Image 1 (cartoon, rainbow, N blue to C red):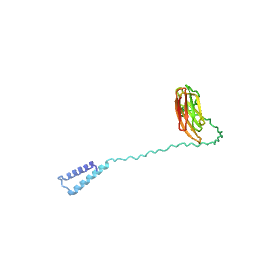
Image 2 (tube, rainbow, N blue to C red; image 1 turned 135 degrees about the horizontal axis):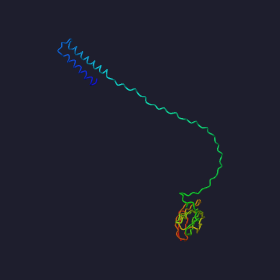
Image 3 (cartoon, one colour; image 1 turned 60 degrees about the vertical axis):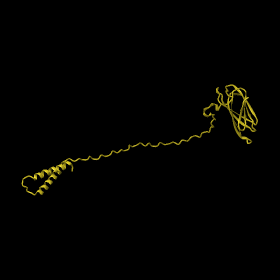
Image 4 (cartoon, rainbow, N blue to C red; image 1 turned 90 degrees about the horizontal axis):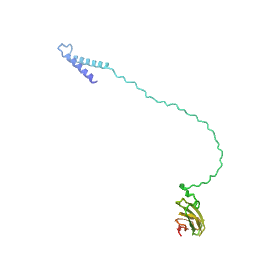
Length: 208
């Protein structure tokens, strides 16, 4: 019961009880009068509450559902069997490429050698046949490249078409009597004769 209803009951009981205390001669016992007044008060409260409008709950709303749209499923197209004609094997032409794009790696010494010329001797002082590879680092005038030669034991070769610059040499032999690998380095700055002596351990460089 809310606060308004409780107040109404108390007020009604108070009025009825007060009326019972009037000087008029009662026709019933005080206990009967009080009980009747209480019952009447509760009846008035019940009628008041019944007359009050009641809140009507709103009907539940249905959650909207999403219906997936139909999708178009393409029909598979017919496939045609294709027979490839046999191809003839063609050997690809060998290509020469330089590591890192350096043109000196594929250039031969003696071709377009710009610069002052000198004399270079390569001497195989070992007891077996050797293969020697010579590489000229690029000079200020752009001369560079490789040159290779095979030398018999205790043989040499002299070049007069090479220019000033710094040379790297590598030598190796697969002869069963003495397999080895060796290398050497030297820079030339005049036209005199310079020598690279091939040994089994190292290639010695000496000037005039």
